[in-house]
Length: 327
Picture (cartoon, rainbow, N blue to C red):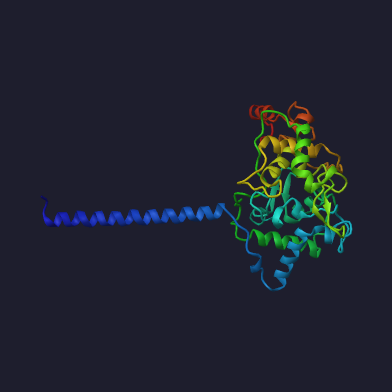
């Protein structure tokens, strides 16, 4: 048996090693928790908006998001520059819903380089893009109170997200759908069963009693988003539908399969809507997404297949062709 002094030293060393491992474990746990906080996001409480001039601008920005048509629609009390839809129609719950195309990553990532424009975009540019495309309208003056309010709200919503972090659940899920082309005929039947009760026959939406705002937005026709909008891409629209429609759906409890979502998206985007072409879009055509519905492309696939799929063969060609766009 080793002498007492030796045993004492061994015990002390073991104790110190144990303490070191425990501290290391706790540090690792705290670090993991911190990383989770950086990845997951929840919007700040609206009751925490300050009661000052800054807070007033934030609240006005939120109002512009939820009731855009009241202020900027065809009968808007500030200007008549949009189609009558609200920002909230595409950015659910005032841009705060998990996987509902939310604004969680805006403050942390803008200014941001975007392939569509081929340049660095500010929040002002991004807001006006939505107004001109999804709301089929005219751009706001960058110095207007309305634009400053939009910016204030977007910055407030994402104020707790660290720089360059994109929280999980931001924007729209990337729907994987490669095996067959979208079927708009099946989509038509699904629309009747799942969508028509809210968005109406003919996709015209449902107006409120005063006729100055949509309770449910039009999905096609003169008052819907135009062909330059992001949701005119089948995979983008299908991802939004999968996690959010019918209206009680969520990312964790969808009511449609991937196939059903893409078929409904195909039907909706097959219907007539305002045509708008931004000739400066995609200056590098190799950066176009596989479901971008308008050529030219760096591959030999048709516009029809780029719009409706199947997308698997396009993706495979892009993986093996140097310089081709990558999804």
